[in-house]
Image (tube, rainbow, N blue to C red; front, side):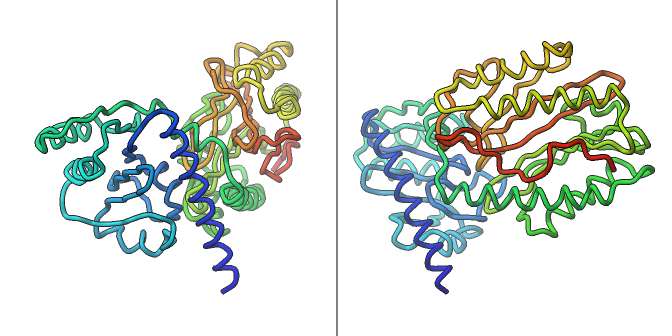
Length: 380
């Protein structure tokens, strides 16, 4: 019982802190209210764990003094159970469209400047405009321009705890899959075992569709597993992660079936060196592009620059890809409390690929990876 009370206090405090940050931004920008429909944003502001699915079925309206959430009967009970009663949210399931409901809230608030998130669908936006006009009411609907993603970029302790728990499961699954892999299995069989291992170790779901790419398939960074049979001498790229409390883990390890060739060992060591140099160099105030270019330099100096074309990393949290961006086009500044991946790779067409990925948090001391799985080349 005590643990449950402590957890509720943590969630309530987290909601209060997040709402304060949003309202401070609203005051700065002159917004009377904000409309949100993106599930990760609503999850972040309500603290309602394990309620959301892929359906966009909720709308939130937040003002300086109020926070309303419109949902339907499929989710209403879960929200009541998982949003602390004193967190300031008013939850209803009025049987009207989300646009009708939202327009009425805007009118009741007498709001004149109402910001909308960038992810709002055009259909909802146009219906909202129509419903507002039918009320003989007028307001401006400026875009947030990614403000919610910037707020969510800095993780609190409650979020970091969930990310670490997701990683513990991911690490345990890696140990299990290394004991499982044998020549003669297909990529699909390995994927099934790896995903089952995550669920068996307590995952609430999968962060994304698991990548198992063996031999020449590994030269395609986002290859999908298929019927290819793995054999002695194959490198296998495994990119996967467990979902826990709506927070994602993301890890890639490349293993070898049997002893690696000289070239395989050389490429692996270069990727590992690039990864570890970047992890050591990452610090608050550094640009995402700057960190990416360090990985490019390490790999290019070793003669493989043309075989590393994707970004070094990306933010992770309630979404598997969020800010900050860590790539050649990034304008993001890495901040203390931000969580992101470091995942350099080398991909040799027709031969094999190698990627080594950790996800971690940037602290005042530097980059702290969540993963406990070894960086040594594991041979199975």
